[in-house]
Length: 147
Length: 147
DNA sequence: ATGCTTGCAAACGGTTTGCAGCAGT
DNA sequence: ACTGCTGCAAACCGTTTGCAAGCAT
Image (cartoon, rainbow over all chains, first blue to last red; front, side):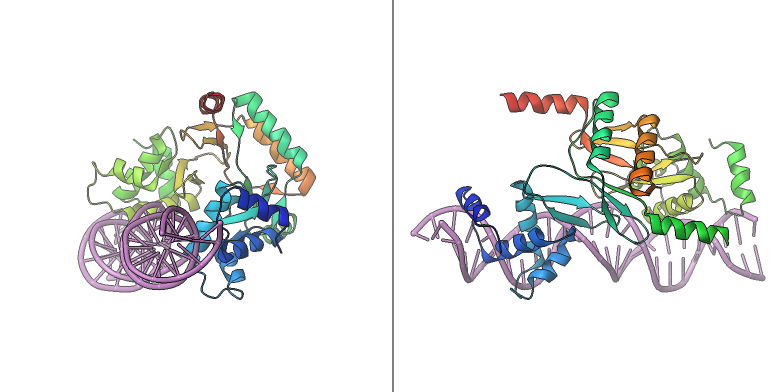
């Protein structure tokens, strides 16, 4: 379920490996998209019905601190979490209408990052979730306005 | 305090002009940077001690709906509000260490917007507040890491 | 006079925390 | 055995909402 080298890495770093933590780590690890704490909680429930949402939050914070998970703020107030074994950040576009998350072309991200450093000496260091309208929803709105 | 043409515009649009609304509008109008609801509330207090925070929120929503104010999500969970008479959005950089907000060079914003349309057919339609480190704080961190 | 707006207070939802007991090392 | 993690429940904080009274029109 979880790669052996990850397990040894965790053990070597003196972190306690409780079943809760492993289930939660597995959930984010296998997730295709970013999950909210509640979603992760729901995913872990079947295997461990007693896990509390507080433990999910605590574990996600821990995973964030040791650099395995990146917290992402979505369109609503809720935080989402994404597995992030290697250090490379990749950014998202979030449609405010249908909620779809697209990954931004790394080249575009890189261009933006360099432009900001050049113009403002500012260093992006966090995940970005840029709100807007995806192709489909933008099209729908055009139709609606036309009618 | 508030431009006459703005007053007439509001009146013409059939909006009720209560003293609370005028004070709140004045507060965001004169603010140099984006303010939280609490900050606006504090600014209005001296002139109108009875104003409730709920009224501030309701008024800010109203101002947002009629397009005079843009809500901006900062680094913490709190919303910030910025006066926005003309329709042009301008984006910000938010330093996660000292909290400073810089305005992004419009050219950089425009480049990003076109790149996203070109690559992903995605239309940014919201204010952006990009998190990272400003020049000063990035410098401090370099020093800290070196020692 | 009408009905939108306000103040008050209570609810809300996501997240955090205090604490006693449990479990990984 | 020690220490830190977990479950539970309650607190927290920004924001929203229901309601009766008030006020702009």
